[in-house]
Length: 255
Image (cartoon, rainbow, N blue to C red):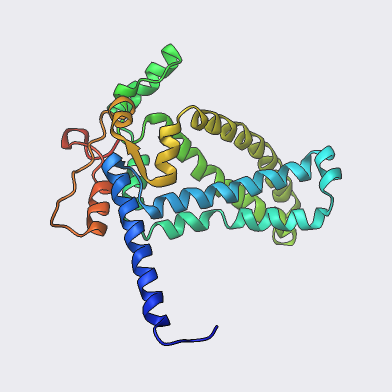
């Protein structure tokens, strides 16, 4: 690339205009809805989605004979499956750097009285009760707990299968049994998760852009009370405050 006088200033001007366009887009999204997730949180979810998708796809190619014949190259499929599985905890660990992610992880890990009422309502009527949902409803909390536990178990059993010489035969046999059957359960649970996501475009928008419509918050998560931003605060600090505020004080800032 040839440098000419004034090219540096033109590049700086283009970058400035790009930043201004991104800032305007961010402001328009904020004006249209409520900030539900920060960029760090959406990145963690997107990374987990891709890694889990690769794990499930490669597992299907290893266990379904018809797919194995079509794909071939079993050794490569095994390698991709192993590395995508071992990398699954990495986005979560990296996400812990984000204050908003840690706050939401705390909300997902705590059950309140309205969460137990939500579960009883679902068990009795087979219908969700939005009036009993904070930032996350009880079903989302259970799914998050299952996902964390499943990833840990699958990683542990997978390592025993990956390095067979490090453990006795009975351990490897048990690890294979648990790994295979838990993989089937994970596939079923993910299918249900995707099915529910397809039915809720506003929730998908929240994970894609970080913002959800105010109407959706009122209808689906009425117990969630995001703290309004303070005009004098920088944008980054406003984002953190908005995501750390989960509930009104009487609901223990969780939900």
